[in-house]
Every structure is written in C-alpha cells, then in structure tokens.
Length: 342
Image 1: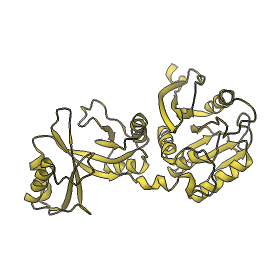
Image 2: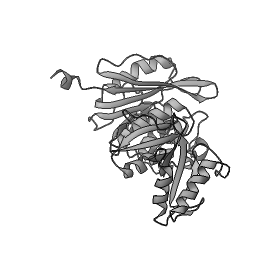
Image 3: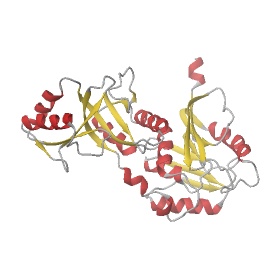
Image 4: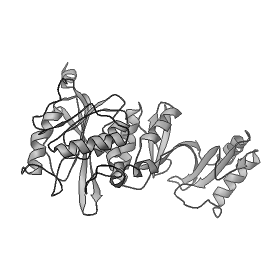
C-alpha cells in the first residue's frame, strides 16, 4: 500500500473528505490510518499502487489532485537534485497559490535544486509537477502530483447541457460525491427509487454500475433515459410506478447500493403524499434488498427513521445544495448479523 494525499477543492469540505475516503475504499484502499498529516488541508488515504491513485482522481468530484509525499525537511533540496539528474523537466509551485511562485523564495530554491541536478524547469508541460506545502510545524513538505482531477467533465454534465431538463436537479459534482459515498464499483447493482432526471444514476453508471430505477412519472423516466443515453450510459431497468410496490421483472438478486435523492418541495411530485411519509414508506423496502456490506446513500432535508439493527450510520453531512436549501447526505452500511452471531 502507498500513502496518497488528496487535495480538496474547497467545496463542501466535510463531504469532499468523506468522498475521498469512500472512493479509496472502492478501489481497495482505506482511510490513511495513524497518519501525522503532512498538511492539514490534504486528506491521506492508503491505496494499493500508483495506478489506483490515478483511478481515484478519475472518480473524484470535490478534489483537485492526488499527491505523493516525496520529502520532508530538510531533505527537499537533495531529493530534487536527485530527481533532476534524469534530465527530465519539472514545474514547482506552492499548493493553494494561484501564482507560478516567482515571488516565493522556497519555490525558487526548489527549482534551482532541480536544475542543479541536471533537470529543466517547464511550467507548461513538465514531466513532473512538484508542490510545496507547510506542515503543522510550518516547515515545507515536497509533494509530487500523480494525477489531476478533471474538473471540467462534471461541468459538461450540468442540467443546461442535457437533453431533458428540469428547474431543480442535483448538480453533477454532488451526485458524483454521493455515488462515491456509496462506494460504487464496476458491475455493482445500484437502484434509485426516485429517479427524477437521472442525475444520481448517471454518476453511478459512469463508474460502471448496473442501473435500476423507479419513478411515478412516466415523463421523468423517459427523460432520465434520454439523459443517460446522452452521457453514454445504459440502464438495466427503469420502471414507471410507485416505489413502494414497483418491481423489476425477472430481477431478484440483492442490490449493492441504494442511491437516492427523494422528492421534496413544490418542484417534485409525491402524488399528494407528504415527502417525509414517502421516504418512511419507500426506503425501508429497498434497504431490505441490499446485500450485507452494501450501502444506502440518501439526501434528505429532515429526519428519517432507522432502517433496522443491521444498518450502521456511517456519516451525516449537511451540504448547501442550492442557495436557500441545505440537505443532509446520509450514509448507511448494512452489516451481516448472521456472520456476526455465528
């Protein structure tokens, strides 16, 4: 295992940190245990190898890059001179600074060390990207970037860019964070009992999941299918009906995750039933069909009932979804009570 540090984007910090940890677990990694944080603004995770770090960056929505710690003080200069001996090019910048570092003495000294070893400085297309950041003792650490998060791809999936549009839909970055909280893996069976425009299923599908969904509004199901197709994502089954009794024909296997954003407010259709009542009636039914070890991620504006003793609450993270709306991202994990009692 290797220690990887995730630089968060600054959006919804608690959600971003939880996303990084859950996504690393989906890749066979874990939270960076017993880590004296090299930098307080970075989230340490342990991953099997550097390929997994690249895969992690491709999953994340609320982060900027994945980094490896290359040196702690006072070894930064020797480490950079040794790295420069290959003749490669490098860029050296300060983490969190928009400038190139031309006024930063430590950045300039690091660049000189790399050149002294025989390397070249190239700020546009370097072979290596190094970042300086101070630890708790205020002394700089040296990190190397191993993968960058594609921040533009999520923007291309925003509602105005999709063929089927509604005034209110979960932004793609938050939908991707929710899919990561569910630890979605390729081939997983993921169900959304309240499909809406398909934002959550789209992100799960882009992570390789097999998609199932229910919505009482036939227009929403048709529209969600259009949006999924636009994004190059297919669905196993989307059905029209009440999620309290709808079924998927020919399907009886358990699901790996329930991932949902239940209806609320005037922009959503509940058939006259209160939003809280819909959630209390529908979610336990689908929670019961999740395999042991699977997760339920639900985005709610208010309290919901527990799903039973086999369910463990993993996280409750309040996030401002729209200007006047704060909702909680709630994460639950199903334990195997049979295995525990054996």
